[in-house]
Image 1 (spheres, rainbow over the protein chains, first blue to last red):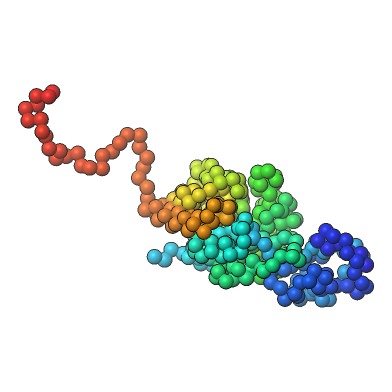
Image 2 (spheres, rainbow over the protein chains, first blue to last red):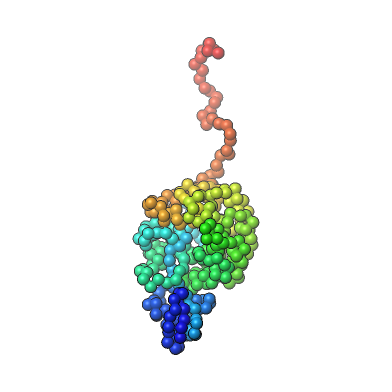
Length: 68
Length: 263
């Protein structure tokens, strides 16, 4: 299926979940300061593995940076 | 001397909140944290950069500070609410420094969107500290919807222009029932001292420290400015007057003109 991850088009296999995207970005699932929104809704860490994506899903994966 | 800052259910011994944006590297940030004796530091969220090395959270942990996530870069209440929810997830805190910007050149807050976002976040259980203008009416509105502090600007973010309207800031301070934290505009230590003398409860400082020629020295200077201003504000300044008032007693001045001949 075709999805958008942080603004970039990505192709993922059937059955892909939020956890698949996190893995794709080479992020340790326990990494601190990371959060995910799927189609504008926050998906808590505990639900990454069982939240399925669908064709056209928009995923934002964010991490901590310095800021005022 | 114990003089803690109380915000919501929290007590902080440092009245300087350090913004972590703009530091050249993590080591400099860590040193600045220590020099500032900060207990609370702001952090932000951006799209994950797979090439980024080392988390800023590890640096802040090592320095022994807590994080206050912000919603920098949001232009609508909706985006700010979603960003705050992401921050709650990423940083495991319901504290949020709420920023809703209305214009990309001035980075001034959008009052309408700000109040809407604050209200929604308070309803959702967040502890909200909004970045606001120096408008006393807006500060009151934010307090009314349940914000635990207000964070008026002294001047635009990163401008280093100091406190452009001390009169408005004083009115906010007089009327606020929640802590007032000067946010934005500090250019150097004396600006932070002035904010505290005026009666602010704390100062948030980012660019003035991180973009200084020597950020670690400036962190220390701003921390001392905050302490000096706090003490001076409590000590009570003398009134301003147009003419001199001698500090040496005027009585008992010896006379050398024995016969008054010079008159």
